[in-house]
Each structure stands twice: as C-alpha cells, then as structure tokens.
Image: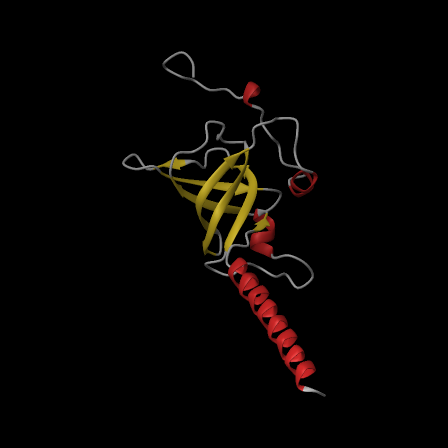
Length: 163
C-alpha cells in the first residue's frame, strides 16, 4: 500500500472513530433523561415475565387515578401527598408546588419525578387530564375498570358560592 492510500485509510478510520465516540457520548447523556411510564400496578409488581421494577432514584412518569380522600395538604407549605391507583395497589405521590386547576380526587393524572421508596414518588411535575372523553389507548387499557368521576358529576361545597 502506498503512502497516499495509507494516509486516506487513517483519515477515514479517525473520522469513523470520532463519529462513533460522539454517538456514544450522546446516548450516554440521553440515558439520564429517559422517563419510563408506569402504572401503579406495574411500579409495585413489575413489568413483563421477569417482573422488572424501577430502581430507587430512577426518573419515571406514573399515571393513574387520584384515590378519593387521599389528598393531604401541608397547611404551612405547598407540599401535597396523594395516592394513585389503577386496578391494583396504590402508590403515594408527594409534590411540592401548585397543582393544576383540574387536579381533584377521582381524576386521572400523570406525575413525573423520582422513585424515593418502593411505593413513594417525589414528583417534580403533575399533569391533570383535561378532557373527559379522550384517553390514550395505552392509558385506557392500563386503567380498565377504574371509575372516573367527571367534574360535572362531582359534588363540591364551596363557601364562596362557586369556583
């Protein structure tokens, strides 16, 4: 092999190595930002035949229905604790912040945060479902059998005479 071909070969190999290194660095960086979606049953019992459960400290999203009577608010801060359920066990979510206007007991929500204990999630974001009719097929299948209470059918008493 002459010197010109050898130089060309080394240049091509160097470019391929740089591309492979940059792809590996991007995948490593993105690995920390992956949020997997779980239902409360999947979180507690695991997913698949191997019953794989998330690790403590893992970032995740969890979706379910807020259990009636489970919302506990700290009177001195914005800390809120509530339970989520789908068709099986309940999971507790702890959130420090202002909840969405549509958040209420019996309402479907999605919380994003970190798994702190086996059944406790410290949420950084809480999203409430805004439409009574539409539900993604995956969520509808996961929540099959859960009674959703539309806001129009909920009984609320407000001393101010309205919302």
